[in-house]
Structure formats: C-alpha cells, structure tokens
Image 1: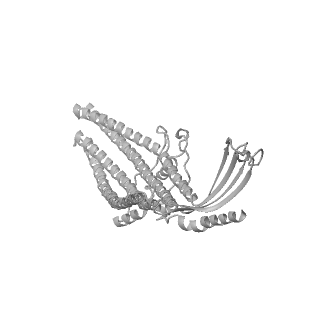
Image 2: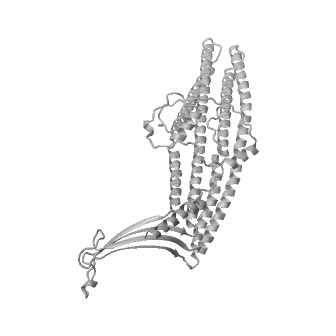
Image 3: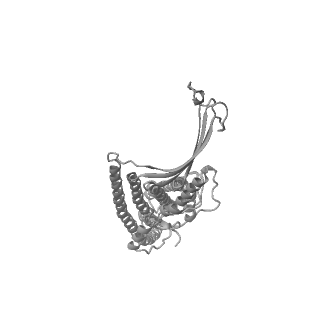
Length: 469
C-alpha cells in the first residue's frame, strides 16, 4: 500500500509546485501608480464622536491625509479590495489536492439461511479517506484564478480612484472654507466702511451740511451689509461642517483650518496633461481589466468543451464495531486502498456551451467598446478641466486690476465727500464696487485652485497640497 500512496503524493507535488505556477502566476500589472492605493496603513472602524479635535489649525495637506485615513466610505472600498484579494487566494487553492473523509454506520436485519450469510449482528461501520488532485479541468481553474487576480487588481485601482475623488472633494470644500472666510472678511470691511460713512454723514447732517436723506440712505446700506455678512457667515459655517464630515469629525466640532488662496502656477500643456491622464487614471486601468476579466469568463465557459480529469487515492476501513474492529457473530474487518483517475465529459448539451461561448464573446466586445468610450470621455474631462484652469487664471489678473481700481475710486470718492465736493451716493457706490471687486478676486482665486484640484484628479495624480508651490 505504501507504493501507490507515494505515487499519488509525487503526482500531487509535481502538479502543485511545478505546473501550477506556470499557469496561475498573477497577470502583469500596468503601472504601479495607476492601481496602487494611496493610503497603505489599513483603516479601522471607530466612533467619530470619540475623536478629539486637532490641537492645532489644520492645513490642506493634513486635511487630505486625515480624510484618506478616517473617511468611512474609503474604509468600505478598502474592505471590498481586501475581500477580492482573499478571493484570489481561494481560487489559487483550487489547484492543490483535496482531502475528504466519511464515516458511515449501517444496521441491517435479514432472515436468511444459512445464518453466516446474514448481516453482522452489531452492524457495519466504514471510514473512508480520499485525496483528489485536479489534473485537467478544461482550463476552468486557471480562468477562475486569473479572473480573481484581475478582479483584485481592479478593486485596488477602484480604491485608488475613490481616494483621488475624496482628495478632490476635500480640497474643494477646503477651498470653499477659505473662500467664505475671505468673503466674510470683505463683508466686515465693507460694513466698517459703511458705518464710518454713516458716522460722517450724521456729523454733516447735524451741522446742516447734508440732508436727512443721506443719513437714511447710509442707514439702509448698513442694514443691508449686516444682512449680507450674516449670510456669508452661514455659508462659511456650512462649508466647515461639510469639511468636518469628510475628515471624519463631528459636524458640530470646532476645528480650525488654515490656508490662503494663493496663486500657484500651472505650467503643463494640454498634451502633457492628456498623456499623464492616459497613463495614470485608475478608471482606465479598471476598464482594461474589465476586458481581461471578460476574456477569462469566456475561457471558463469554453472549458465545458473539454473533459474534466482528476487523480484520486482512497483508503477504506470496515468493521462491525464503531471502532472498526471485528467482534460478535458474523463479524468481519477489512481494509482496502484504491488509486486511479476519473474523466467526465459532457459530449452533447444541445448547444448550451456553444451559445454560452457566443454570449461571452459579445461581453468581451462590450467591454472593449466601453473602454474606448471611457478613453474619449477621459480626454474631454481633462481638456474641460484644463480650460477651466486657464480661464480662472485670466480672471485673477482682471480681478486684481479691478480691485486696485475700485480701491482708488473709493478713496477718491471718500476724499471728495469729506471736502464737500462729492455726494454720499458716490461714496456708497464706490464702496459697493470695491466689495464686488474683492468678491470677484476671491472667487477667481478659489475657482482656479478648485479647477486645478479637479484637473489633477482627472489626470489620476495625487497632489494633496495645492496651496504649496
């Protein structure tokens, strides 16, 4: 019995360690940066209410890193990616031998003559151990493993895609916070100017140099500025709550964020942006993997064209007691081993396999068309973001000039009013123009950085800190 067992063991080792690595080696990856997740630490599920507020103001880089580590949606994507990796390992295990055991107990009663031919009085007990080794499964095992490996790579790229999208969302909300902070500061400055103008107008009215109408108009403008300031502060509070949520902090937690809407030059050309996008975008990598997965699914379907072959070795012990021994009347005990091979082949199934193969072929074509469509849309996405960056950059130059002109106009109108050669309306109008010019400059700077963040995401590149050259 030792020689067949050694033969089966030798066959299993040969198939598992010599042939299998040649078949189920993982498919080559495209580029590491297009499929590798950004955060490597591993996310854990914790109660956001127990997280303390940061001890110092948070800049954009820290905000992005915090979101990548603690945002629950990314934890969900990471868990899915890890599940796919474990599935890949499971499919790899199907190439090795399998060991199964069974134990049976049977009690029969029969009245026959002679007595020796009757079933054992204490029953029949059997224990069987069988080891099987797949030899050829029509490439089904290979296809299933490679599909699982491709799916694991695809889910890793999907995690990176989610991380890039989260980076863009955090940066957009961070910039909104800075935008509304500057708007609040501009509104406060405008309110201070209007209050000063009201004070001056009242002083002139009290000495009879200005009519009551100027005082009333100045009071109305102060009230409107106070209302606008309240609205701006509410927008800022909403942006802070949204940013807290993305970072895994409670919405009502007081977190200080620091930064400035500085202009960071962007020197890449459109052609360079497109080339980087085609090389780095995770969704393009996922689309390519989808085509390969469809091909492996078709290979699994085609395996039904071929026979399924496996080798086996089994040992069976029988007895008429639960411990497989011989005891009592008509008792017996035996031990047998068997080594061999099995082959099954579905020769005819009314075209089932053929049409399943045709259907899988069409799925492959579908994935290829979707991949090409995604490439076209990726090109448009990059170009639209690139144009948005250039547009905002031009608006910044125009807005800076407008702020300088509006500041000079306000100072001139205020000086003329104080010298009694200008009107109150000129001062209020100049103050309103200055506020609009400041708001336009703030909006242009925030729009530029937001468009830049979206462009980096469209290119598939990770740039966590846009405020640093």
